[in-house]
Image (tube, rainbow, N blue to C red):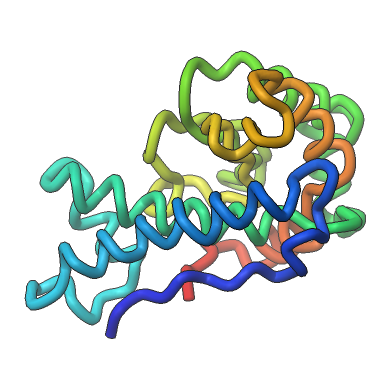
Length: 202
């Protein structure tokens, strides 16, 4: 069965002005759709057809750059849409405790996410992740992903230019301020921590 474009969990204009409906029309409707289409075309009629997206990513890593890039980007974007929320929400008590343990406070975590995102060279992703009960900020370049890693990703921020250029031009820090301060989905992060295993693309 072919993979589908994961729907946005909010209205296209719900993240405005941090992320506009115009940006989502291109980013979700065109960029993400293209990754899904290319992944489906690459696996059709192969042993990968019918596997989970996570299994496809793991099998393609190191053996098929094209399939890996498109399948990983399909997963990353699905995870990213869920990492965002119109009102952000609040972390669970468990997640709040772990944030305080790892970073000192929520404000310090937000500061660190912004710094790592602004400092990330070229395209990629910045993640809040958990491993062995401890939180950390991880980075992956280009299409690389935590989907098949030793980490349990809780949230991600896309720092490819197409994620922010229409709204913030070349000012990546402006995009990071808007997203980190009010649009990260802490309920989603809390659910990922509670589940204790990596989110699956559906």
